[in-house]
Picture 1 (cartoon, rainbow, N blue to C red):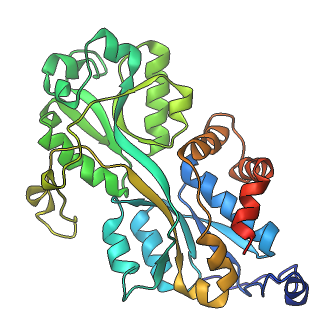
Picture 2 (cartoon, rainbow, N blue to C red; picture 1 turned 90 degrees about the horizontal axis):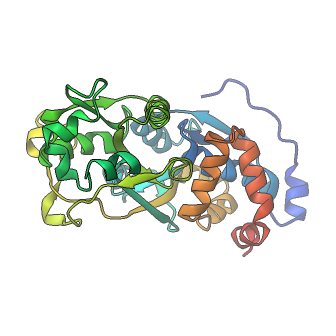
Length: 322
């Protein structure tokens, strides 16, 4: 918790005059996990609450999803808002912290997200790589090695992402894990590897999700998978020491629902903020464009969010209006 609480610029009297309620005495905090898609939505919310509701809002760096959820559930102001709740990826946290006994509220609005494996279209088309099952061919897997002769390299995601554990299961159950070095690195490292591969005309493959700036920056091909089947999707949480052996996943993700979550403590202190958060939603394309502005064009998350808000006044009005 912070030892210093800054005085709000906009007084409760002024806010009440505009019918916007009372500003929270302690700054509202929104999680910034460091990757562009979530930064885009986080800073849109930050500026929205500051400029439309007169709240003081701080972005808090945290790259660990479990830590974000624990902080939300404590309700002490460490993190009040999390704008990148992917379901079903984060279902265990939603069940634990946003259920009847939890202290987190899941906003009802959401937009769609997709997940799978991507490679560059040029390499895929030249080498007849169309499906995840093609990766179980040692010769095709070797195309993604550093020298074209040994094991391939495939990026499964970053440490701390729930999807990274899921990808570990899927790599095994799709039959290609033995032919690859399974990499878990920061997304920035994976993107740098992708960029280097594209420039060199070499192979790169890894977990990919949309919205994402890479779909605008590169010509990527999403590999085919069996259609999502709940009967072929069993994932046991890593809190179980035998989680990997007990898990079995042999089909694609279903399209994700991406929600905002916020602490019930925040809702109690500032119900007008909660009412706005319940209305805020995006489109996959909008978030991809926000991410592109941040990750590719080099704009700060705050500048990208401010430009996006200025370009969408009617949507902002629908969020703020009764």
